[in-house]
Image (cartoon, rainbow, N blue to C red; front, side, top):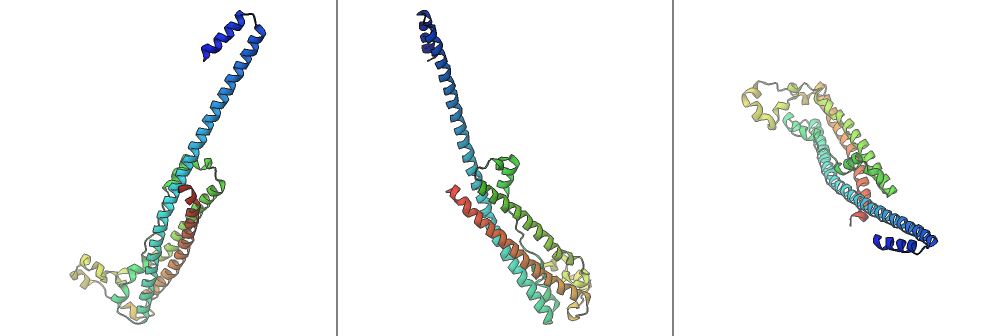
Length: 251
C-alpha cells in the first residue's frame, strides 16, 4: 500500500504536476491521521470492554462473598438463639433452686456463640488494587461502599458488646464458682483432684457475691445476644439487597 502511494507521488512529480502533488500529499497525510485516530478509537473501545468485563467479574466475586456471608450470619443467629436459651435456662434453674451442677451445665453455652466472620476477599482485592475507582456504575459502587462501611461498624459494635459478657468470667472466684465440676472437665482434673477442690453452694444463697455475679452474667448474655441478633439481621438485609442489585451482572 505504501509503495502504491509512493508510485503515485513519483508519477505526479515526473509529470510536473506539483500542485496536484502537494494536494495529494496533504490528502495522504489526512488519510494517515484518520487511520491513526480510528486505530486509537478501536484500542480505547477494546480497553473499555476489558474494563467492563473486569468490573463484571468483580461484581460476581462480591456476590459470592455476600452469599457466603448470608450462610455464616444465619449460622451465627442460630448460635445466638442457643446462647439466649441456655442463659434463660440457667437463670430459671437458679431461681428454682436447682443443684449447682444443673445450673452450670448451661453456663458455657450461655457465654459462647459462633462469631460471624465476613468474607471480604473480593472487596479487599478491589480496594488494594485501586480498581474501585474505575467502576462505571456509580450507584452500585456507592451501594457496595456503603454496605462494607456499615459492615465494619456492625462488627465493631458486636465486639464491643461481647466484652461485657467476657469481663464477668474474670470477676468470679473460679474455684468457688465450681467450673471444675462441669462434666466436660472431669477427666482433665481427675477424681482425686476434684475431691480436694472447693464445692461451694453459692446457688443457695441470694446474698452470695457469686450468685449475684452469675445472675448479672446470664442477664447481660441475653441482652447482648439479642442486640447482636438485631445487628446481624441488619447486615443480612443489606447483603440480600446488594445481592439483588448484583444479580443482573452475574447471569
